Length: 234
Image: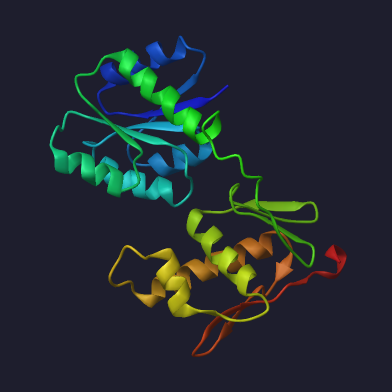
C-alpha cells in the first residue's frame, strides 16, 4: 500500500484530501505539526508528499529542500499562489508538480497516480538497482543505504553522494572541490566547513556498521576511503 503524506496547515483541506485519497486504497498521513516536518517525513517514509507553500515558520520551499536531502520521492505542491514564479520556485526547490487552490479532488488523484507511475510503476526507469561493492561493503545509492555484514544504516542524500564519490575514486583521493561541486552545484559559494560537517556525519555512519576510521583527510587535497573494521567483523 502506497503512503501519501499531506503537509497542509488548513486542517479542513488536509482532512478533505485525506478522506478522498483514502478511498482509493492509499494510506494517508497528515503532518502532526509544523516544527518537525522532516522528522515526521523520515519516520513515515511516504511514497509521495502533498505540500503546501504557506506554512507556519518555514515555507514549503524550505521543507521540500530538506526532504530532498533524504529522499527522491515525488513532491506535489498545493497552493493558493497562482503566479508563474511560484510554480518555477516549486520546481527549482525540488518539487515535481504544482496544483493551485481551489482544486478538484479528482485532479489531485490524477496527478498522484501520474507521479507514482513515473516513480515506481509502469513509467519508472527499468534499470536494475545499482550496488557498489568494496571489501565486503555493500552500498545502495538508490536505497540511500550502506551495509556491511549484518549491519546496515540509512543515509541522507548528501551522505549518499559523498560515499558514492569516495567509492568511485577508491583507493584514490576524492578532491574537496569535486565534492563541493557535486553536492552544491546550484550554489555559487558554500562554506567549506559545511563539507567538513557532512564528512563527519559520513564517518559516523561507517562507525555504526563497524568500519573504523573510514574517511581519511588528505591535507590540501581531499578525502580518501579506508575500509578497516573491528576484528569480529572480519
